[in-house]
Length: 75
Image (tube, rainbow, N blue to C red; front, side, top):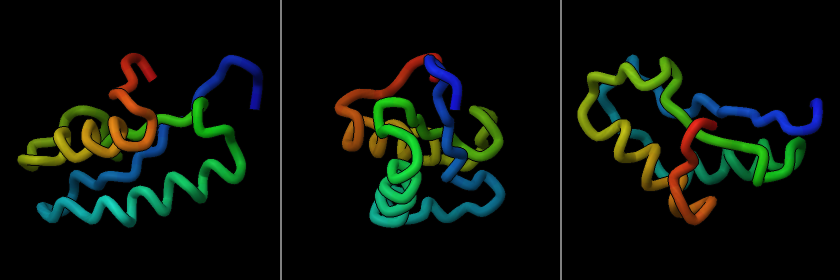
């Protein structure tokens, strides 16, 4: 991966109403961090920020805050 680039992980589906588990998201982030340094990773809904399913954006922010200590902007 070129220097200065980030990988955005579209781990939260917007196609189903279920929120999904934070543990599953943490596990998938850990798996990605085996290949790319954690500080170069970000999380987002699979279809960008167009989620109409309530709670999905909040889940993304909550997991980002837990993993990175803050919600990444412009990732």
